[in-house]
Image (cartoon, rainbow, N blue to C red; front, top):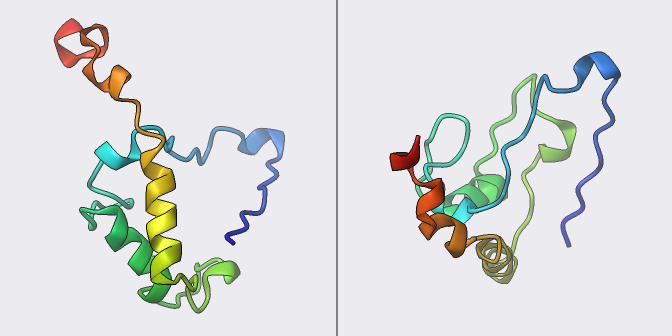
Length: 98
């Protein structure tokens, strides 16, 4: 099980550090802030065993997030359920309409 703790923001902080939506995450590669990963599996493996300690690392990530192969497969299967193929193929939302 993966537990995500809620983040409480003071009013002046709202909107400063917004996270991207997970909608269509399967189709939105490359991943990470610098685009270093081309697959969801690479991202999960990074959190599983590729975390490098640094002064700015969140304490919850120290040592990585232990994920079994089944955990990774389940998580990727879940993320793929967030793909909205109707939205992706609807011409009303294509780049040609802007």
